[in-house]
Image 1 (cartoon, helix red, strand yellow):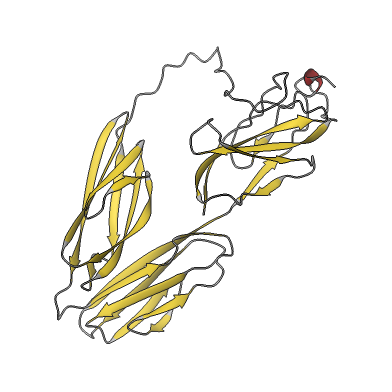
Image 2: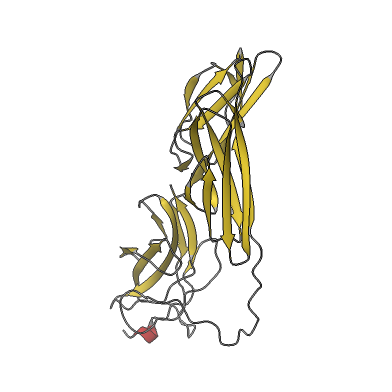
Length: 290
């Protein structure tokens, strides 16, 4: 069967728009994205200035304690940490920092085509007579139905109470197994000496590893697809530059569990016929694999 007869046009990864382009006429992986629409004469958009939020929880810790930094940047290509932490960071995420033995400033700078932005947050070490609490999660990004362990310690408190994703009185220092989680949760812990309160929170993000798609039903000429043999899923850390692939020799399959190295990846897929002729890429999906 020729590629023209297998011109699947509507293979779509669920939750994103976009259609599968016509088959290119040869087998094997496609190395280039579909060409731009020649009728698209709109001027390129201006480059907006990056935005950035940066927070710490808690902002007061016992001597030698840890804090969780959380940040989110829009319209940036990347971020760099300085001050109490260093290194290249993604445009969004969380990171545990510590041990913290003195008041510390944590700084984050993000940049993009529209410029740069810097934010900083200070984590202070509590005085000897001051109430403080720290709360951490062993893993802050997990898959559906996976679990993680919370750990905490307090200073100067006589009672600690849980809220958010858990509840009830807790010991002044301890650990807690979350059990299997189906969705993201924020766990908070308030400790007090009866007069002064201290609050710490940590968010455990739950990500679905499953890639789902809608099978192509029609060829470009409007006739039904009758020779669909399977799919190839591609992924990589950069858009349209894929370094991994997985072949599915089943036309009825419409989902795949991405058991690959944890990270953030761009996914796309193709369909192929019984002769191995492979279509162009589907739309692209950016997904975190915990």
